[in-house]
Image (cartoon, rainbow, N blue to C red):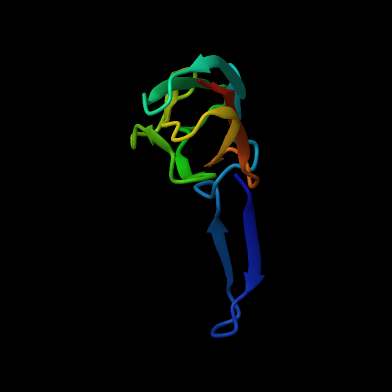
Length: 128
């Protein structure tokens, strides 16, 4: 507990404030990704495929997925809206629907409460 004192401007008495309820700066927010890139190999045209990116909350506070953006309309991402508790794992399901043949490389940007920056997850393969 930190106690701050200062003279009151109203009556000359010292006032004390207890800030022990303030957030502790030692909170650890950390996410560990099992994989950040998945190569699905060959896929069929117009047959959606789904891959899961598993992550673990390795911190001591609940982890929240704050934002997810995909690189194009042919890629969609779904995740639980519930916070991931310390030590627990969850996943983000990414579905890709290939509209044309050829190699592909798509990305999904994920923002969590553990980092100010986005984590980039990628999926690649070749459409037959």
